[in-house]
Length: 284
Image (cartoon, rainbow, N blue to C red; front, side, top):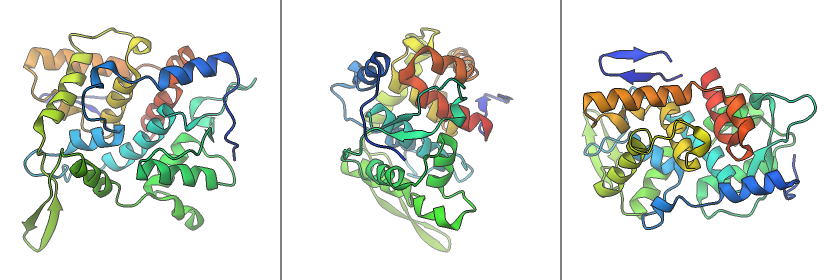
């Protein structure tokens, strides 16, 4: 699991597509489908595209060779994005009150999203004979399973497919670079303003617009902070800050990520998938 990095130190840190039952679920669905007002005039990116963009070196066009977390982080982003779009949810609490990581991912709707990775994942979730948990789905989508019959659920070439989508949206470009014995396709950032907007949004969320309450945070922003941490790209978000603001931003983010996912998920049904993904990475 990743840790939050401070400058010069570390801080340890089967299912029918039926509609949700109950007014609380319906209210959560409405909240989850609200757009971030700050993004209304900007290019609309998926959470996975945003995480990859944060992880890419601007000029070099590739992620750090030492980052072994981003692959699973991107799969967690797919689950959150599907939940935000009203396609999946966690099974409702029963009398036994299962913990987040024990609750299964249920299909709410198999209506296409228009995004290739999201729709492929939807087909996988629909095709399973028995429902799986969030943690299991992250492992299956990443290909980290010993069961040869479940390797079919692995999503392949995720980074390359996301990069291609960002190229089509005019944010990245495609180049070939020679690395001694082999050539590698890279994707330098061509639209730096879009990346800067994303970085500024996250910086402000823990500085000028800090509310000290995840339930009052815009859900996509909360999700992106969780995924940036899980993908080990959070340092890239705060690296440009002055030292004093950097420490404030890192400490506030650490406080946020150290919150008990079980407690926070119980406060607002609409954030359950976000906290379940965080719980999965905290456990891994």
